[in-house]
Image 1: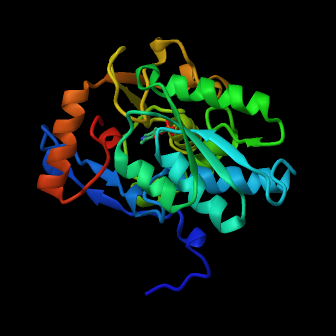
Image 2: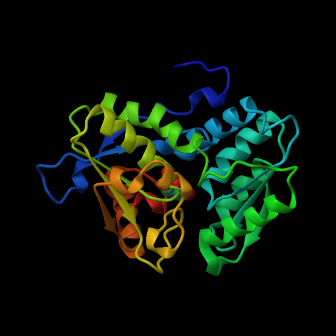
Length: 266
Ligand SMILES: Cc1ncc(COP(=O)(O)O)c(C=O)c1O
Protein backbone atom coordinates (compact mmCIF):
# COMPACT_ATOMS: atom_id res chain seq x y z
CA UNK A 1 0.00 0.00 0.00
CA UNK A 2 1.37 3.41 -0.93
CA UNK A 3 1.84 6.11 1.70
CA UNK A 4 1.16 9.80 1.04
CA UNK A 5 1.85 13.00 2.96
CA UNK A 6 -1.50 14.48 1.88
CA UNK A 7 -4.57 13.51 -0.12
CA UNK A 8 -3.47 16.18 -2.59
CA UNK A 9 -0.59 13.88 -3.54
CA UNK A 10 -3.19 11.25 -4.48
CA UNK A 11 -4.68 13.39 -7.27
CA UNK A 12 -4.22 11.93 -10.76
CA UNK A 13 -2.52 8.78 -12.02
CA UNK A 14 -5.91 7.07 -12.25
CA UNK A 15 -6.19 3.64 -13.91
CA UNK A 16 -7.83 2.67 -17.21
CA UNK A 17 -10.39 -0.12 -17.06
CA UNK A 18 -11.60 -2.24 -19.98
CA UNK A 19 -15.31 -1.68 -20.58
CA UNK A 20 -15.40 -3.24 -24.06
CA UNK A 21 -18.40 -5.30 -22.97
CA UNK A 22 -20.39 -2.11 -23.72
CA UNK A 23 -19.06 -1.80 -27.26
CA UNK A 24 -21.60 -2.62 -30.01
CA UNK A 25 -18.63 -3.60 -32.20
CA UNK A 26 -16.69 -6.56 -30.74
CA UNK A 27 -13.55 -5.48 -32.62
CA UNK A 28 -13.41 -2.22 -30.65
CA UNK A 29 -11.66 -2.02 -27.28
CA UNK A 30 -13.20 0.59 -24.96
CA UNK A 31 -11.20 1.85 -22.00
CA UNK A 32 -12.60 4.09 -19.25
CA UNK A 33 -10.36 6.32 -17.15
CA UNK A 34 -11.39 6.00 -13.51
CA UNK A 35 -11.36 9.66 -12.53
CA UNK A 36 -13.76 8.92 -9.69
CA UNK A 37 -10.74 7.56 -7.83
CA UNK A 38 -9.43 11.08 -7.26
CA UNK A 39 -9.77 12.05 -3.57
CA UNK A 40 -12.71 14.46 -4.02
CA UNK A 41 -14.28 12.01 -6.46
CA UNK A 42 -13.82 13.44 -9.96
CA UNK A 43 -11.52 14.58 -12.76
CA UNK A 44 -11.95 18.12 -11.45
CA UNK A 45 -9.50 17.45 -8.60
CA UNK A 46 -6.75 17.89 -11.17
CA UNK A 47 -7.78 21.35 -12.33
CA UNK A 48 -8.79 22.57 -8.86
CA UNK A 49 -5.33 21.77 -7.50
CA UNK A 50 -3.58 23.29 -10.50
CA UNK A 51 -5.69 26.48 -10.37
CA UNK A 52 -5.01 26.93 -6.64
CA UNK A 53 -1.26 26.27 -6.97
CA UNK A 54 -0.92 28.70 -9.89
CA UNK A 55 -3.00 31.36 -8.14
CA UNK A 56 -0.81 31.00 -5.06
CA UNK A 57 2.37 31.30 -7.04
CA UNK A 58 1.25 34.31 -9.13
CA UNK A 59 -0.07 36.12 -6.03
CA UNK A 60 -3.81 35.95 -6.93
CA UNK A 61 -4.44 33.86 -3.84
CA UNK A 62 -3.10 35.37 -0.66
CA UNK A 63 -3.64 33.83 2.79
CA UNK A 64 -7.28 33.94 3.88
CA UNK A 65 -8.61 35.35 0.58
CA UNK A 66 -12.11 34.18 -0.32
CA UNK A 67 -12.52 32.09 -3.51
CA UNK A 68 -15.67 32.33 -5.64
CA UNK A 69 -16.43 29.87 -8.45
CA UNK A 70 -19.38 28.76 -10.60
CA UNK A 71 -19.73 24.98 -10.76
CA UNK A 72 -22.33 22.35 -11.47
CA UNK A 73 -20.71 20.42 -8.65
CA UNK A 74 -17.45 18.64 -9.21
CA UNK A 75 -15.10 21.62 -9.55
CA UNK A 76 -16.81 23.17 -6.56
CA UNK A 77 -16.35 20.04 -4.46
CA UNK A 78 -12.69 19.66 -5.44
CA UNK A 79 -11.95 23.35 -4.88
CA UNK A 80 -13.78 23.33 -1.54
CA UNK A 81 -11.74 20.35 -0.33
CA UNK A 82 -8.47 22.07 -1.26
CA UNK A 83 -9.57 25.55 -0.09
CA UNK A 84 -10.58 24.25 3.32
CA UNK A 85 -7.27 22.44 3.75
CA UNK A 86 -5.33 25.58 2.83
CA UNK A 87 -7.44 28.09 4.78
CA UNK A 88 -9.35 29.91 2.03
CA UNK A 89 -13.07 30.60 2.61
CA UNK A 90 -14.99 29.53 -0.53
CA UNK A 91 -18.31 30.37 -2.16
CA UNK A 92 -19.70 28.15 -4.93
CA UNK A 93 -22.41 29.40 -7.29
CA UNK A 94 -24.50 26.52 -8.61
CA UNK A 95 -27.88 26.06 -10.33
CA UNK A 96 -30.60 25.39 -7.74
CA UNK A 97 -31.58 22.09 -9.40
CA UNK A 98 -28.26 20.27 -8.94
CA UNK A 99 -28.43 17.08 -6.92
CA UNK A 100 -28.70 17.17 -3.15
CA UNK A 101 -25.60 15.03 -2.55
CA UNK A 102 -23.47 17.64 -4.33
CA UNK A 103 -24.73 20.31 -1.97
CA UNK A 104 -24.06 18.05 1.01
CA UNK A 105 -20.49 17.37 -0.12
CA UNK A 106 -19.88 21.10 -0.59
CA UNK A 107 -21.16 21.74 2.91
CA UNK A 108 -18.96 18.99 4.38
CA UNK A 109 -15.95 20.72 2.79
CA UNK A 110 -17.04 24.05 4.30
CA UNK A 111 -18.22 25.87 1.16
CA UNK A 112 -20.95 28.48 1.17
CA UNK A 113 -23.45 27.69 -1.59
CA UNK A 114 -25.03 30.49 -3.63
CA UNK A 115 -27.89 29.25 -5.81
CA UNK A 116 -28.60 30.55 -9.32
CA UNK A 117 -31.87 29.97 -11.22
CA UNK A 118 -32.20 26.32 -12.29
CA UNK A 119 -33.82 27.34 -15.59
CA UNK A 120 -30.61 29.20 -16.57
CA UNK A 121 -28.40 26.12 -16.06
CA UNK A 122 -24.63 26.51 -15.78
CA UNK A 123 -24.67 29.72 -17.85
CA UNK A 124 -26.79 31.32 -15.09
CA UNK A 125 -24.25 30.22 -12.45
CA UNK A 126 -21.40 31.66 -14.53
CA UNK A 127 -23.20 35.02 -14.93
CA UNK A 128 -24.00 35.26 -11.22
CA UNK A 129 -20.44 34.35 -10.17
CA UNK A 130 -19.05 36.92 -12.61
CA UNK A 131 -21.36 39.62 -11.23
CA UNK A 132 -20.40 38.77 -7.64
CA UNK A 133 -16.69 38.75 -8.51
CA UNK A 134 -17.08 42.22 -10.08
CA UNK A 135 -18.84 43.48 -6.94
CA UNK A 136 -16.16 41.95 -4.70
CA UNK A 137 -12.72 42.51 -6.19
CA UNK A 138 -11.30 41.36 -2.86
CA UNK A 139 -12.41 37.79 -3.70
CA UNK A 140 -10.37 35.51 -5.97
CA UNK A 141 -12.26 34.39 -9.08
CA UNK A 142 -10.38 31.40 -10.48
CA UNK A 143 -12.96 30.90 -13.26
CA UNK A 144 -12.35 27.41 -14.66
CA UNK A 145 -13.86 28.37 -18.05
CA UNK A 146 -11.01 30.78 -18.82
CA UNK A 147 -8.22 29.62 -16.52
CA UNK A 148 -5.18 28.25 -18.39
CA UNK A 149 -4.38 26.06 -15.38
CA UNK A 150 -7.46 24.00 -16.31
CA UNK A 151 -6.43 22.67 -19.75
CA UNK A 152 -2.80 22.70 -18.65
CA UNK A 153 -3.58 20.22 -15.83
CA UNK A 154 -4.88 17.83 -18.49
CA UNK A 155 -2.02 18.55 -20.89
CA UNK A 156 0.50 17.81 -18.15
CA UNK A 157 -1.17 14.87 -16.40
CA UNK A 158 -4.31 13.31 -17.94
CA UNK A 159 -2.98 13.24 -21.51
CA UNK A 160 0.43 11.71 -20.70
CA UNK A 161 -1.19 9.11 -18.42
CA UNK A 162 -3.60 8.01 -21.16
CA UNK A 163 -0.90 7.68 -23.81
CA UNK A 164 1.37 5.85 -21.36
CA UNK A 165 -1.35 3.35 -20.44
CA UNK A 166 -2.99 2.96 -23.89
CA UNK A 167 -0.29 3.62 -26.50
CA UNK A 168 -2.36 1.73 -29.09
CA UNK A 169 -5.30 4.13 -28.79
CA UNK A 170 -7.02 5.48 -31.89
CA UNK A 171 -9.73 7.77 -30.44
CA UNK A 172 -10.17 9.92 -27.35
CA UNK A 173 -13.76 10.75 -26.38
CA UNK A 174 -14.87 13.08 -23.57
CA UNK A 175 -17.79 15.24 -22.57
CA UNK A 176 -17.45 18.98 -23.06
CA UNK A 177 -18.07 21.32 -20.13
CA UNK A 178 -15.36 23.94 -19.77
CA UNK A 179 -13.59 21.98 -22.57
CA UNK A 180 -10.48 21.77 -20.37
CA UNK A 181 -10.27 17.96 -20.59
CA UNK A 182 -10.68 17.87 -24.38
CA UNK A 183 -8.31 20.79 -25.01
CA UNK A 184 -5.55 19.65 -22.66
CA UNK A 185 -5.65 15.93 -23.47
CA UNK A 186 -6.38 16.67 -27.15
CA UNK A 187 -3.41 19.02 -27.53
CA UNK A 188 -1.08 16.53 -25.84
CA UNK A 189 -2.24 13.61 -27.97
CA UNK A 190 -2.11 15.62 -31.22
CA UNK A 191 1.52 16.49 -30.43
CA UNK A 192 2.56 12.95 -29.52
CA UNK A 193 0.28 10.77 -31.63
CA UNK A 194 -1.28 13.00 -34.30
CA UNK A 195 -3.43 10.24 -35.84
CA UNK A 196 -5.56 9.96 -32.69
CA UNK A 197 -9.06 11.38 -33.27
CA UNK A 198 -10.40 13.73 -30.60
CA UNK A 199 -14.18 13.56 -30.20
CA UNK A 200 -16.42 15.73 -28.02
CA UNK A 201 -19.77 14.68 -26.65
CA UNK A 202 -22.45 17.32 -26.16
CA UNK A 203 -26.11 17.22 -25.15
CA UNK A 204 -28.58 18.54 -27.77
CA UNK A 205 -29.49 22.24 -27.54
CA UNK A 206 -32.10 22.68 -24.82
CA UNK A 207 -31.30 19.41 -23.00
CA UNK A 208 -29.48 19.47 -19.71
CA UNK A 209 -26.80 16.92 -18.86
CA UNK A 210 -25.19 18.17 -15.67
CA UNK A 211 -21.63 19.36 -16.27
CA UNK A 212 -21.83 19.31 -20.08
CA UNK A 213 -22.82 21.96 -22.63
CA UNK A 214 -23.70 22.37 -26.26
CA UNK A 215 -21.50 25.05 -27.83
CA UNK A 216 -24.40 26.22 -30.00
CA UNK A 217 -26.18 27.43 -26.89
CA UNK A 218 -24.40 30.77 -26.97
CA UNK A 219 -21.46 30.41 -24.61
CA UNK A 220 -18.06 29.33 -25.92
CA UNK A 221 -15.66 28.79 -23.01
CA UNK A 222 -12.60 31.07 -23.46
CA UNK A 223 -10.43 27.96 -22.85
CA UNK A 224 -11.92 26.42 -26.02
CA UNK A 225 -11.08 29.48 -28.12
CA UNK A 226 -7.60 29.94 -26.70
CA UNK A 227 -6.64 26.31 -27.27
CA UNK A 228 -7.99 26.27 -30.83
CA UNK A 229 -10.95 23.99 -30.12
CA UNK A 230 -12.34 24.34 -33.61
CA UNK A 231 -9.21 22.84 -35.17
CA UNK A 232 -8.34 20.49 -32.31
CA UNK A 233 -11.61 18.56 -32.32
CA UNK A 234 -12.06 16.00 -35.09
CA UNK A 235 -15.77 15.70 -34.45
CA UNK A 236 -18.68 15.97 -32.09
CA UNK A 237 -21.44 13.60 -31.13
CA UNK A 238 -24.77 14.70 -29.72
CA UNK A 239 -26.02 12.41 -26.98
CA UNK A 240 -29.43 12.82 -25.39
CA UNK A 241 -30.04 12.94 -21.65
CA UNK A 242 -32.05 9.70 -21.84
CA UNK A 243 -29.13 7.89 -23.51
CA UNK A 244 -26.69 9.29 -20.94
CA UNK A 245 -28.80 7.85 -18.15
CA UNK A 246 -29.13 4.50 -19.92
CA UNK A 247 -25.39 4.19 -20.51
CA UNK A 248 -24.53 5.28 -16.98
CA UNK A 249 -26.83 2.50 -15.74
CA UNK A 250 -25.18 -0.05 -18.04
CA UNK A 251 -21.77 1.09 -16.82
CA UNK A 252 -22.90 0.28 -13.27
CA UNK A 253 -24.73 -2.95 -14.11
CA UNK A 254 -22.28 -4.52 -16.55
CA UNK A 255 -18.94 -3.06 -15.49
CA UNK A 256 -19.50 -2.27 -11.80
CA UNK A 257 -18.62 1.37 -12.32
CA UNK A 258 -20.75 3.97 -10.55
CA UNK A 259 -20.19 7.19 -12.45
CA UNK A 260 -22.00 10.51 -12.80
CA UNK A 261 -24.39 11.36 -15.59
CA UNK A 262 -21.74 13.19 -17.62
CA UNK A 263 -19.84 9.90 -17.93
CA UNK A 264 -22.80 8.28 -19.71
CA UNK A 265 -22.64 10.04 -23.08
CA UNK A 266 -19.36 8.74 -24.42
C1 LIG B 1 -19.72 16.70 -13.86
C2 LIG B 1 -18.87 17.17 -14.99
N1 LIG B 1 -18.54 16.30 -15.97
C3 LIG B 1 -17.79 16.68 -17.03
C4 LIG B 1 -17.37 17.99 -17.16
C5 LIG B 1 -16.62 18.35 -18.40
O1 LIG B 1 -15.24 18.49 -18.28
P1 LIG B 1 -14.50 19.76 -18.88
O2 LIG B 1 -14.92 20.94 -18.05
O3 LIG B 1 -13.06 19.46 -18.72
O4 LIG B 1 -14.93 19.96 -20.30
C6 LIG B 1 -17.70 18.91 -16.15
C7 LIG B 1 -17.25 20.30 -16.28
O5 LIG B 1 -17.69 21.27 -15.82
C8 LIG B 1 -18.46 18.49 -15.05
O6 LIG B 1 -18.80 19.34 -14.07
